[in-house]
Length: 345
Image (cartoon, rainbow, N blue to C red; front, side, top):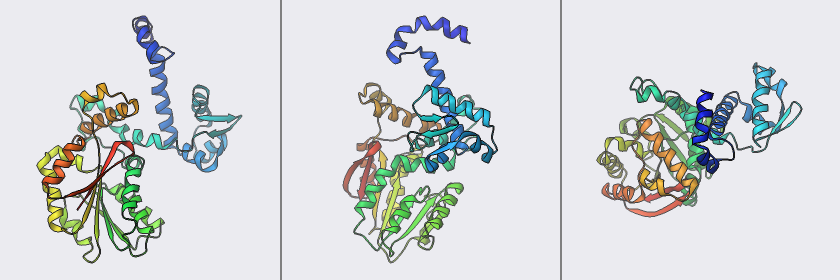
């Protein structure tokens, strides 16, 4: 294998010089090792401990977690010597960026899919039956991805004290908790199809001492009969669908239109906040000059078909779908991560 790399190095040297100051294969290999070492350390709670404690003693941490101290030290030395992620003084190690682990949550959520990608491509395994995303990290990643957009939605509702927030795909219930904390008259309903995520949401609501005002239903958003009885008949209702509707597009636009139209029919006086990515097709990604958007949009377009989701759409498509369903768009606000918030009535 390494003979192959050496043979190819001359051929790709000009390209490599443009990409990085090191040979392309060493850069690629280091990034691969770096990613897997970081994911492993995240799984054993290393980054959480660093963020919480400020610094840890490597051997003491290994002993309390019943893991190999020598192997842990090797992994840490690898990161310390090749990146500026860590500071180390003997066996004491510190994390320079306390928020670093958040960058790993998306990788951890989708790792099972990419670990089995060759089998998925060969149709030996199928997403949903043989392979699935990691629900625990998926709900953590959703906060990182859409947190700013959700914050803007809650800010819009700041003066609406007596209401109920109904969150489709509620994740860890963070939006529900933040909403109810603002006023004691508020209630919230979370709906999530993943049993692990629903359980995590209930736990978070309980730890926030809000389980008396927050209900979490394990259900598909399409199953109206299961969650509709928990929607308040007395309070103003505010529906929230954060980066969920595009998943239904696997069944076509009419399917999404009918879903939105049914909510409008059943709850005609409600308000609906729809958060979706302002997507770029690969043809536009190719010529995108904003590198951050280019890379994120490409990743976003990649993992959706791999996980049996409908493809994200640009703003004009979402506006057409929303209006066809009978909702009126009151405003469109752009948030971080190129997310758009459609405030509908």
